[in-house]
Amino acid sequence: MDFKEVINNRRAVNFFDPQKPVSDKILKEIIETAAKAPSSFNLQPWNLIVLKEPQEKMRLQKLAWDQPKVSQAPIVLIVLADRNGWQPGHPIVEKNFNEMVTSGTMTAEQHQWFLDACRNLYGTDEKKRQAFANKNAGFFAMALMLAAKSLGLDSHPMDGFDHDDVRREFNIPDNYWIPLLLAVGYFSKDKTLLPAKWRKAYDEIVVNFN
Amino acid sequence: MDFKEVINNRRAVNFFDPQKPVSDKILKEIIETAAKAPSSFNLQPWNLIVLKEPQEKMRLQKLAWDQPKVSQAPIVLIVLADRNGWQPGHPIVEKNFNEMVTSGTMTAEQHQWFLDACRNLYGTDEKKRQAFANKNAGFFAMALMLAAKSLGLDSHPMDGFDHDDVRREFNIPDNYWIPLLLAVGYFSKDKTLLPAKWRKAYDEIVVNFN
Image (cartoon, each protein chain N blue to C red):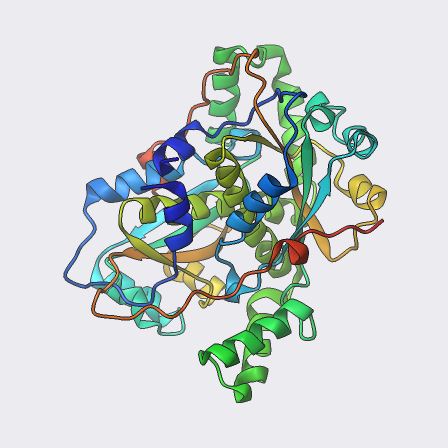
């Protein structure tokens, strides 16, 4: 599908067709396509919990303002942003460094420099940790929504949930923030989409403080 | 351009063609296309400072590890995440509410409910403010990179800068976090792209803590 068509037609849909499940193959394709998103030092501080079973989705729905789409969507993703994804010893941090040495973009002697840069940019205080994890997870989640649309599926990003209750219910470790839940499936074609919401125009986005 | 082609070929390029400026028309198209990104309650808590003048770009480059691409790229965007973008009285918050009333998705009586929901989800502590602003700015920035690519341009998201020095140098108010700088232009075709970096596979992304 053409990029313009994908980005113009992606909508947060409220109704998913319960008769059209999402195959494991399509889900994998969506996730691995979205994983092409860039990230800080390629650290990719994102993970997903995939919920498919009705009982699991109902456990989540109860903590998400009881929104019916949580259980009606064939798939709900709990998007996780790893606030420790810059730490020395983290498997992805070390894998990343080794891959850079292998590809010749860093030398083995730069290991400490790399760890120090990651700590200084992302780890010296809570604000930086939170910005690092959520910005990068934002890249990934945007790519997930577009990848789904490009394959004919729709999605709905949701903020209406109790963050700490969801963490407890699904035993999510404290290093993760949950930036959103993402319902994924096929739009229920007997429903009507609301008109697209307004967006800020160029002059409302571009600012200058000089 | 096909979506797959856009997402597979988007790369963080280090070299921009200094002979190929980015027209105002193309820049506006990139920004307004990216503005189709979804956001929490459609609050769109993102802004951009657009730097084009060599002197302005050099002021930024000095605070960004002196990376030559900051001044070589025809355009550098300072991406801003508005940590106050949920507050009562914020022009976009109130515009948003009025638009929902006009479109019939909320009633005028729900004003206080809407403000309370925004505060509870995004404003009761520093972690929530930071997550709200950076996640949504992440959606927008990802869409900017893909929109640029779809129009034949390249970009480079940059974290290597002194956050607070950039804020001071460009008089950026304290409500903004700067999640990234984004260089935008045309790839310098006499240069060679490095091979694409590795990405986590499906099994490294999907987790389960049961």
